[in-house]
Image (cartoon, rainbow over all chains, first blue to last red; front, top):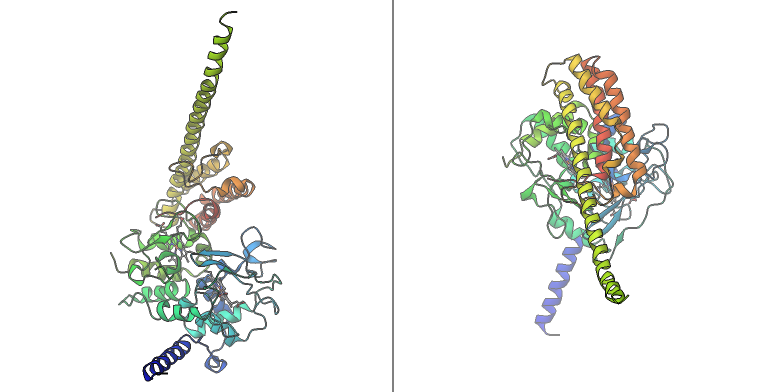
Length: 304
Length: 162
C-alpha cells in the first residue's frame, strides 16, 4: 500500500467516524429534567397547541368511543394509524397512548422528552421528520415535561403500531442523522424584532403549532425552505394547495385571523377545510390570548 | 321489395350514427345538468355565507348587536340548512370531472357520512336560531358550533386552495 493510498484511507476513516458522530442521535437525560415540577393542566394547553392528537388519534371513522374525546370524555385516545404520504414513502403514526405494551406507558419521562424534542427513540434510532420534533425541539423543556405528564393521564389503547411503508434507502434511519444536520430548524425562522404578543405567537407557531410543516414549501430532500417561510405549499396527500399566510398573501386583519383560528370562519364567512380543520379544533380550545398571539405573529411576519 | 336491401343498408348505416348522436346529446344534457347542480350548490353556500356574515359581524363585535336582525339571519340559515339538497350532487361533478368544482370524489364514496355531516349542520343552525336573538353571548357561543359543522364537512370533502 503506497503512502498516498494509506493517507486516503485514513482520511476516509476519519471522515466516516466524524459523520458517524455527527449523525449520532441526541438525548436528554433524567438529570437534565430534575429541576422541573410537572403541571398536568398546563400540559394539556401545550398538548393542544402542539396538535399531537391531530396525528396520533385513529383515522376518522375508525375511532372507538366518541372520537377524539375518548370513551366518556376522558381525552383523546392516541391509538395511531393515520397515514402520512410523502415523496419518501407512507408513514403511519404509532400508538402513543398510555398503554404499557403498545403505547408509551412504560417509557421514562426522559425517553419521551428525548423523542419529542430530539427525534430519538428509546433504543437510539432517529425518527423520521414527519414527526415534527424539529419544531418541538425549539420549545421550553419545562413545557414538554408538562405535556408528558398530561399524556400519561390519557386513555390506553391496545391497537399495535403499524410499520411504515418506505423502501430502501429511506429505511436506513441513520441517514436521518444527516437530514437533521442539514435541515433541522435550530433557531427561530423569524428572528424579529417582534412585539411581545407576536413573540409569544412565534413560540406557539414555530415551536408548538408547527404551522410551517404544512404552510412552508420544501426542497427535494423534504427540508423546509426557510426563505419561503409560510408562503404556501402543495397538499401532500391530495389535490389542492395549502395557502400562504404571510401578510403579502393573506390580507386579513389580526382580529379576522384570531376569529378564524377560533371558529374556522373566514372574513368572507367561508369555512376552513382540509387539514386546517383539525388544527382549528385544537386551537379553539386554547385561551383567547393564545389565538391573539398567533394572529399578531402572522401580521408581523416579514414580506408585506 | 326491390329497394329492401338498400333501405336496410341505409338504416344499418344510419342507426349507429343516430345512436351516437343520441349519446352525445344525452351527454351534453348530463353536462348541463351537472353544471347547473354545481352552480346551485355553490349558490347555496353563498347564501349560508351571507347570513353567517350578518351574524359574524355582530359576533366579532364589529357591528352593534341587534337581536331582531340576528334572529332573522339565524332563521334563514336554519331554513337553508333544512332544504332538501340531494339533487345537488349528481355523479360526474367532482373536482377533476367538472371545471370549477372543489368537491372531492370522496363525497360519492361516503354518501352516508356526507349526509350525516349535513344533518349536523341542521342541528348547529337550530341551536344558533334558538340563541342568536337572545343575547350576544348566546350568539357568540353558537357561532363556534356552526363553524365546526361547516369545517367537519369541508375537512374531508372540499379541496384546499390558495
